[in-house]
Length: 211
Image (cartoon, rainbow, N blue to C red; front, top):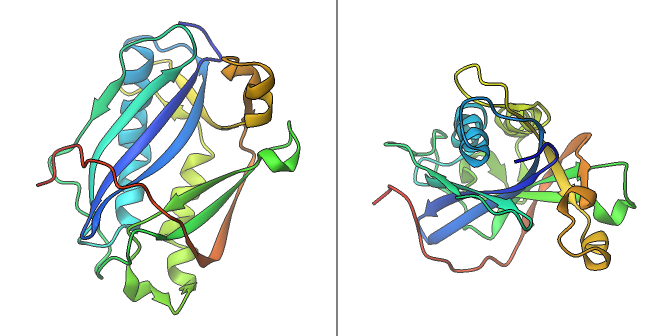
């Protein structure tokens, strides 16, 4: 356990056409005081981020499981969290999983080629016109989600643990294998792109509590 450790968080979804997921990286800035590192981050994400993700998701999309893993040589047990009801809270049907909202992640430590991207599947088709996300959707629920990712993720129950969203430089990792702390750059801005992106998605097994 050490400050600056880096973690991978995978938000798993079940959609009408199959599974989908969102993946992000977080760096520890303050050690947790009551939970293991992975549990502290997972608990914070469940409290601060998952409700805002569900607000974006169409009603027939379900959040099924959050998995948090520590990256690097000093492995710790991963954390897996589910909720009883992970249904999306937006009223329309979901667009196919390959059509997603794009959040461009900005950092200033590495070259701009290391800037990251978050793809959000499960969009409400009634809030998208052709390939353009409706302004109310983009500047409402999607903005709330993006804004939350720029805040520290706090360990639950008034714990001391704090985590921040980062992007990883693949170029740095190729030159310095395993040095995830050195490859991490703080995300300092998130741009919400108004045009739907299309992404080829892997067909993976659905995990979590949704039937």
